[in-house]
Image 1 (cartoon, rainbow over the protein chains, first blue to last red):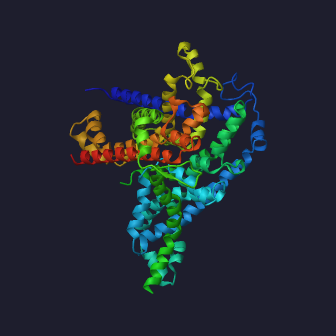
Image 2 (tube, one colour):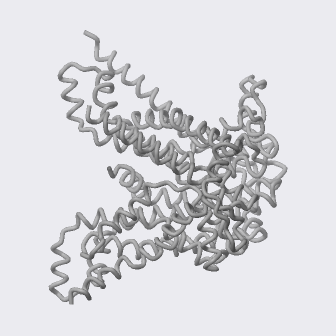
Image 3 (cartoon, rainbow over the protein chains, first blue to last red):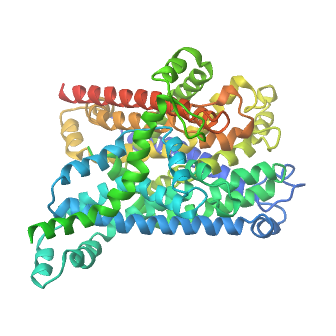
Length: 282
Length: 294
């Protein structure tokens, strides 16, 4: 019979090894980001000589230069504008559709829903080629509207899927009560369905916001006009122009990455839910 | 009355259907149409050339196949190294362990960052020309200076470097899905097995692994679809000077479209990749179904 101390030591050692493993991955995850932030406070002279994570002197002027001289303020506002518009559009349009797919009757309901869902599963690399042609024809290239509509279309399938799944489980009694009180269908959607769907809407909002903020390829084919570019697209241009000004570039990268990390830390619950519910739906 | 009600119902899906038709369905159909033609994207006339584009892809386009091979190589590393790491981390975090929540939070930070940002940050960590090359400094510090070299410009290491950075960014996805999968396994199963005298390894082999197969297939499909279509990370990491050795399929499509103005050919490339991806995920899905029945 082995003693209790044996088992306790064994368990302790095992846990220690597991924590060592996990912590080493944590360090690998965080180091590049800390290095990015640290470098953004250094100068061209010290960036390669002083590789510590805490700079000897903090140079905030990189941020001033990035925002003022290199228009990062504008790109940032562009990104914010696109993200807010797209997310707003997706929330309204997808919740209307999802509510109809779940509750209202009309011919072709299932077929149309299946088309939306199939789009989520069929990969079509290179669809940006005809999209480029189409936007040119519609005179929507180099316009914010063209980009916003494309990005709404990108996010629709998943959002409709998430919301319909939720509406299907919603108790009907509240809607019946509202109907008896003389509420129209649109009124029920707005006053009953949407408020109840708040947790799912949070997932939809956060997920699509991340998606729009990080999007690159459509921004690449849609925008030639620098004044309209979102951050990701501007970063690539910026790198071409200021290839040698690393602290400035690191400031630009930090400006791009930090909002996402902050949003993530606060809205983590919804992101995790979004990942697992879209992935494990079968 | 009935008709009015039905029309009213259609109004709910109208905006979604319109936007989706214009910006998804029409491009979807056009891809197939354009793939059968020779077109520079500007001239009003398109020349119908039947399957000539596909013939050229299959028989006369070494650049495309090199890009496919590169994509395949990155995918292979993502499937093995990245997913194994994700699974191990999920197993570690599924236990009664302190700081579980903290670990989970950190592991999902790389996936929420954009490919451009991740590529650029890593470039300045590992590149010699315009970076601090922390990795080389680390090797020197450990007395392994002979291992230090320029990871991104050496054709022998460039692709593996890309694949490892890709894995750094991607493992958090797999980790999160694996962890969610592990948490759906009823704890009673383990307790019953313990009572029957099974040890930890037996439990893992007889309960955890078989029950996780569907989740593993799912993660594998998502990994293949995501990795074969990844490209922005490489733009950020390797930048404009990407020669053949780090080119991937979507980068080829972009180059063919933007630099050579061969719109029809670019569409044909997109379809060939899309078909391969659909076939692979379908086969995997079927295999997992069969496994589940056994």
